[in-house]
Image 1 (cartoon, rainbow, N blue to C red):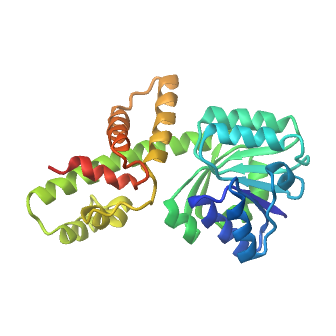
Image 2 (spheres, helix red, strand yellow):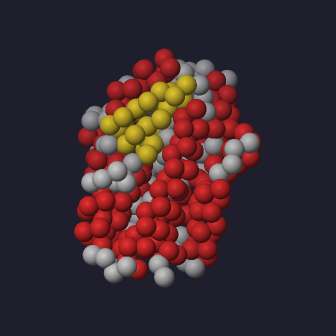
Image 3 (tube, rainbow, N blue to C red):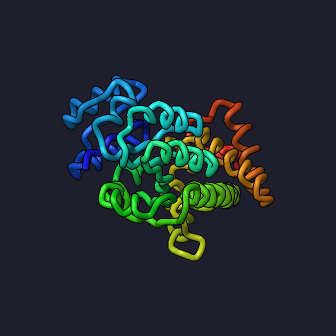
Length: 284
């Protein structure tokens, strides 16, 4: 099974490296072609000038790009050159509506589309420990499961097209709430003059412990906000969640608050920092 990767950004690069090491990857494409050429030099994987060219030589196309428009642009680009029976797996974070639209476009070409967003951050992409939530045709999922397992530690099939992205929206809303709780609590601890490393160590081992506190707590209290997960990207995802909530009648006030907090920090020039930079706005 020949696999091509489109998108070698912060997440895509880690995924691609794990695929190459597992012997699956046979083609790469990146908008910044220099990055694709460097990958070719390191791993000996052919780099293609366009997504359409890549789609002609593989059985599975993996996408990891930034936004809904990017996904649809690539799907439209490869639709004319893709081979019948090809499986396209999109690991970007976009709306359920976009996933359903992409699936319909490829169905007309006798190709399958799986929406398969991931969680676990840059560390998870690098270490092959991502959690993947997947929607689309189950038989197509079974065919590509060995490929996806090279990048993940957990894959859960969620149902029909769009359900993977719907689940990722749940994840992003929850991440916003955790970010609010952790940054607020640690700012409260700092205001008391408590020893911050000890606070983080003891709470991480109790009922309030969580991944974000364990992996970002000490860095944020030291004023270190390296990505991680850029605030601008989480902001983009939360706006997708807001649109989906409007469509289904849900109320997500904590997400609305986080969007507003991020907008202020982004305007102040902190958008490329990790989302733990929300700590800046919590400190007295």
